Amino acid sequence: MVFISYPRLDSSQRVEFSGSLESSSQIPSGLEGSFSLESVLGRPRVKIAKKMVEPAVTSRAEIEQRLAALGKSEFKFLENIERDQWTVQGRYNRHRPFLVFENNEAKKLYISSKTGELVLVTSLFERATNYLGTVIHWIYFPAIRSHPALWGDVIIYLSMFALF
Picture 1 (tube, rainbow, N blue to C red):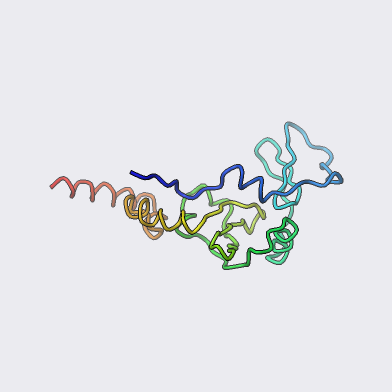
Picture 2 (tube, rainbow, N blue to C red; picture 1 turned 90 degrees about the vertical axis):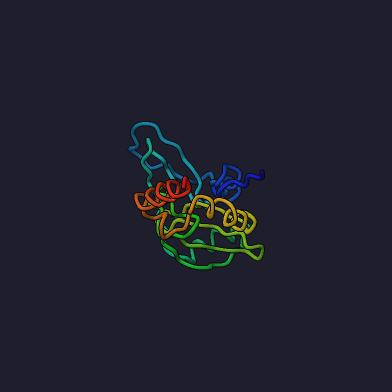
């Protein structure tokens, strides 16, 4: 049996696309509590005790410029989406809608249009193997999966049916 993980953003991909912060990046004054300074596509972001102080993402063009500055200009804009096969899970809700970029090797970047944060990276291999495995096995189709109660009912009733 072969296992291919469902697409997700791992730490090495996050680092690859985050860029470095300039030494001139300023931390806003008056911050209370614990905080950290992060980089989102080369732009500073302050994280204060689980609350984000986000820089405004002004446009698709700005994200394209940031990708180019990170040496990722091979990624071209593909589409705006609310959800698709790979972003059905509720953990992506705060990032919706997404700007999707793709390169010549069919690697896709899902970037939050709200924060400019890279949320997911998928390869053609991951998508193809997961269509053949996870999606079919778990009945992970977006139309059903976007309604958790319905998806649960479908799984339960099909399981019961399989007993006979």
